[in-house]
Image (cartoon, rainbow, N blue to C red; front, side, top):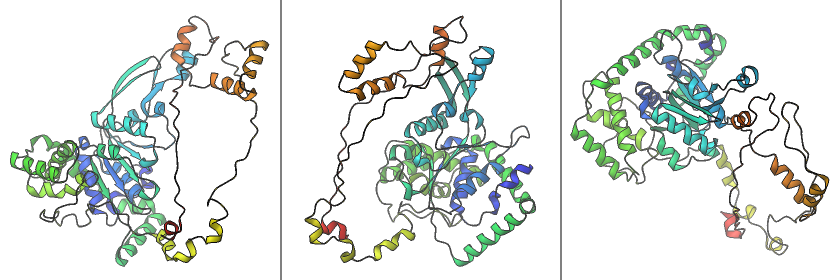
Length: 441
């Protein structure tokens, strides 16, 4: 165990959350399941278990498993990879610079607050997670590399939901609760205090459990191709998916893969009904469109803290606002006669002139002449001319096209920019119901 691993809380030392542990282990056994989406309130060990998963995954060539975090402010170039600017400026050569997907190969890619990530990045991330290959065709660079990783995304439903189309792309989902017994609270605080006081000694106390779990995962991975799933169980999975009214057949595919991984985890030779039931809530938690039927037997007792099928938000401190009575929240009739509630008078704001920032390395196109600039300013007022000037400088730099247009010249005399995406004008209307009955509720 490396010294850097002492900064992370051991996976096997986390108290409770057995359902989440099982889902992460199954995804580590077979990354083709498609990752795990963890939904839960603050302080439910989502990030702790996600970071601890890398320490119990089998290592390749005696190297530690990579753990890569995708920040919310990451760009598509940082995720996929892009043109190496340093190589262009220093060596005058076009070279590919790997992104986060290349760094996460054979490791764990962790996305905190995935519901706040841009939808375009989530689409790209899930595509690569499902295929295991990252294909980059941009900036004059064509590159393909393997990117097989365990995708772990966390979200807090209080901060916004993830689109159903993106939820379905995650293989498994676990919904956590913030309700603990007194004994569980005491145990969690005690373990955390021991870790904070002596991280190295605390990790050494769990190193044998960590090693045994890593060996069990490695052994299960080697048995995946030898385990068979009978047609009768495949028919049962299809029937359960149809009863849940899921969209498409992605749930069926993920369910079979998760059941096989669970059988490998139990060191079984074939998939049984126990394996099918053990992963049912993981597969259908974010795909079920009809309530679960009572005739289906619950998962086995090996995972007592399995996620509930519903996505009901657990009780939290925000419920204290419900104590206000209708009389306190409803406006008085005298206030209704004044005007619209929440309305604001429009204010005129003066527009500032556009500021042009020049660069020393690259020079833009020749500036407009005095007459052309004057004409641009006279079109629909001076602010219109400033808007056109700012629009001319928008768009990211197309480095590949810049080098082609300035072949044999260094530094390039003219900077080529990509054409910006112009969306259609859309009028958004917001309707606020400020009646007394609505405010009273």
